[in-house]
Length: 296
Length: 324
Image 1 (cartoon, rainbow over the protein chains, first blue to last red):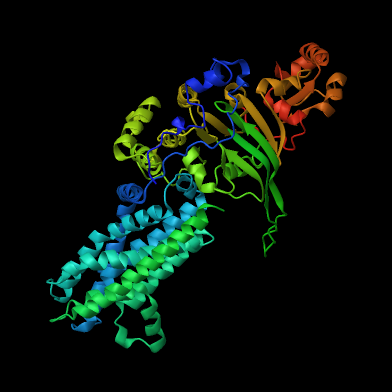
Image 2: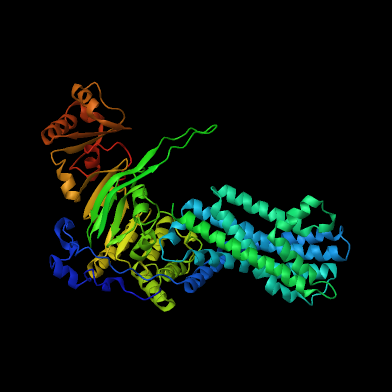
């Protein structure tokens, strides 16, 4: 895999220069009147294939290309995501008390930025790409499906970093929470990002129509908002069950636990592990969905 | 180098829903058989909906045919569609995957995804952008370019990471003459230097006549003719096309003009007639002298084009081929 093979050096096929002379004529095909006479095929034997793009270099290339799109198209949306979360925290300030509920609101609002970008925007992106035929571009390149999905998901997860950090710091200051353990975002953002981006990519690629992908992305984000930001103790049993099903919840819980005076790191790790597992599964599903969408 | 045998694809019938009528089953490609030779520019010509793009999607491994075989350079593309990406470069009609990238990054990323390492991808990117005159636009996102420039940038991306077969689906749509010339000279250079083969989809008859070595004419999913443009035109060599443009309305009070009406294809003030040379001469004499001349705005006599061939072969769609 990835062996550098110049196709024109294939054994079975005539090379660019000597081949045309060997086979039929010394005149290049394009100067013949009408050009009808081209070089006849040598014996039926398969030409060597061009190189395949390897996983990591192509993942890096897709990631870089997707990240560059941020400069053109994504920055206004990143502002919207951040302002939305900041606005929610300001609203909730009058409603919640200062203890565990405040921690849940700050953690929920921070992870909401991840949900907005990684789930909602990525679902829209893949939905539109699929509907408009943009996937053909990738499908006609020898690139592993996982590289396209992981590169895009990784880039969208990266878009969320500034907004999430700003939201978390603002929330801590607003509610008087300690900033000491904010470093845990280093784990929360990629793992919650992987889970939500995988979900977003899968929704976008599986939705039969782009409007449906947009709708599903919006619904996912609304769910993350309602179930993640609102303190869980006040919810009825059925809603709590739905909350447990949503992957963003575990990112919120992990982050919220670190605000306590003595965080229980085992539980934090447990929650992050759930995010990681969901991330692996959903990215796997998204890769399968990409394969399915690319060749019809 | 590319052999297509009995390729068939049927889109299933869609049942009507409330407010939306159903569509019947459509044979998008119907038993298509073609041979493309190495180093030639082979064209697929036909109006919109003739099945050109469906055929190309099957040749590029993007769509599985219901039946038939596609073999490119000895590889069975129906059984191994993933191999197509390692044999050919495809320029589709859509640029959405590249729209928000800069011209330079679009070309470089495409090259890397074609398996080039960073250094090689950058070197080829610079060479191709320079060759196509895109270097001044290298830093601009595709989205901000005009339609023709964007198309040229996508063409550039298709050229980075050389392939023995280029499949180009209407590559010059929206391009100005300078950009078109850049495209065809880039194609010619690859053909002369490396024996690159080109499969071109077009509905532009003028372009088809000037650049193609051979052309397959498609109509409702079937290949109705396949020959050189000159060879195809010989089939209707006995005919001349007469276009008459009237100032206001046709002078139907002139009996000779009234007699022509049944044989003319009318489009606004324009009448198009396909006649034998003798007859054409007589018609021109009639309309340029006497009462009809006062009503005549313009007229042209022309030898047959591929459009006439298409119509003479029984192409179903009267309007659909573009002359630019």
